[in-house]
Length: 167
Image (cartoon, rainbow, N blue to C red; front, side, top):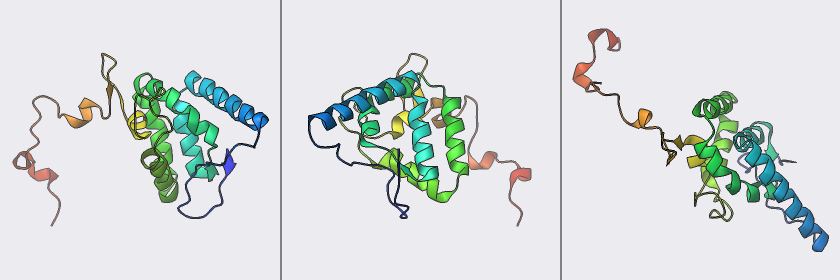
């Protein structure tokens, strides 16, 4: 993690090149391998890293971003929705600027080499906000959110007088 420059609207992402030479390339590769292991051990760390980056103004190193696609399938299909929701509520409570930075990181950056384990996802959002159905098939939104329960009458004419807003 790298401290950001604090400028409003500056993304919390670092694309700084690794040190020149073979030693620098080896160090960068070692960092990526380490991040892959850390993120596969607990894929929710992707979401937490984004939350802390947005809230505290840190930039995430390029080695983190190179490792993220390797954890996305687990984040999308294995991490419970309630754990994701808890992290999302925390970032929502952090305030407007951290929330906007978080959303920018989630939706605004294409993933590096998205086919190397990210399931071809164009950005982080499907894995962060999605989940899996009972068969393990990845879903962007829960069917419970998109589809009303059976028997629910959601037409405007079904609203009770007590739920109407006061004049």
